[in-house]
Image (cartoon, rainbow, N blue to C red; front, side):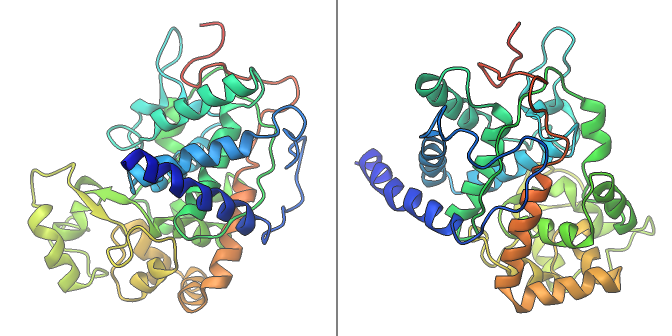
Length: 335
């Protein structure tokens, strides 16, 4: 019965995906990326991806945020090339072992299922990098957020960079200048930064990622003075001074499974869970103005988020004869 209900639920989800996406036309593309890349070679590619993402989301409401996060963590390391999906083998040390991904990156089995279905329909055609770009968009739409037309044609890398994963992905305790620099190195500006961090309107974070805010933010044994006192008190029972490292907390406790602008409203109330969230409001007039804008106007947030996702998805893609189309997303073809 549950399987039948899930299948029935996919029909409106897929329809919603394409109706919402059409409201956000594609931005100008660069290189050889093209929204119509698979129109002839694998015309049902996007429908296959959307159906499996819809099923995964129905079975696990946390999965949408996890799949969206994979695309971020992929693009910030060597570009959008699916390097995050590679397991360790031979000379490859998996990015899954890096600090930002260890014990937290998930959704790999969903990507495996999508890849298997696409290989059955169109062998050797759709890249794992494009799968990540599509599942990110689909996950946002299926949680109530905006859609956008995804430029396609990325190819997959033959290597990974655990060092890049450790160094290039913004960390929960980074200062705002550090976060701005990490975004700038990817060709992303202040608007992209504040809009893209709005993805924290869904998903979870572990106690270990924000514990210092509760007890010792600056090394003086005091909690973060940029954190609402009552919110901090509510967090402490499940995030003690020691232990409970892997306990999960909603990034947005108000509407944790809905993609909306509540994240920014939380920042205005000093209820951003991560230090890297709250500094958007407290540490820069420029980013604070964007936080206030998005908190007041969800439509503008959605528009900017969709534009910034397209922009991020074009970070250093492999195209043409570069890279390969992996048969299995977890390993390069010659392995």
